[in-house]
Image 1 (cartoon, rainbow, N blue to C red):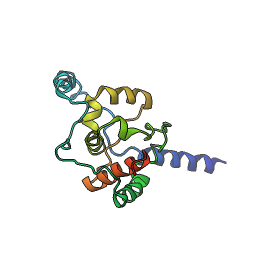
Image 2: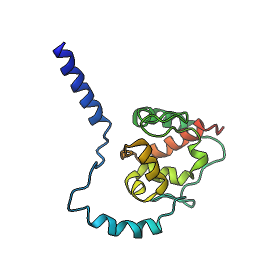
Image 3: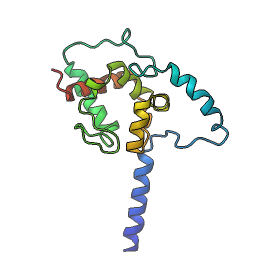
Image 4: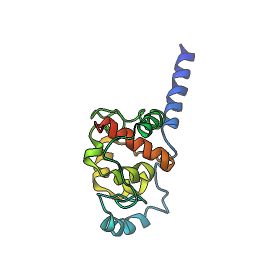
Length: 162
C-alpha cells in the first residue's frame, strides 16, 4: 500500500510539471515594484481586438472556406499541445472550451494569443477575468507560426467553417 501511495505522489507531481509549460509562475521580489508602473501605459495602448504580437488584419488573411490540410495538421498539434487543458465544446477543463472562439475573437487575436500568451494575459482585461475563473495561466507552448496557423484552422473547423 505504501508503494502505491509513493507511486501516486510521483505521478501527480510529474503531471503538474508536464502541464506547467515553463511559464513563470511568480514574479521575483525585484520585479514586483516595476510591474505596476509599466502596466497602465501598456494597458492603455493594448488593442483587445488584435492582441499583442505580430499578427494583424493586414498580414494574416484567411480564406472563407476551410483548408482541410491545415485543419488536419492543427488537429494533430492540438492533440499534443492543447486538448489536455481545453475541450472542443464550450465546457471548461483547465482552460476554457474552444466552441465558438473563432466567432468571439478575431483570427489575428487568436494567433497572437497562442504564440504570445504572457503579455496578452498581463494586459487583456477579458483574459485576466478568464484567469480568475480558470486559476491557471496558459503556458507558452512555443508554437512555430505554421503550427499555430494549423491550430487556428482546426479551431475554425471545430466552429463549423466548411
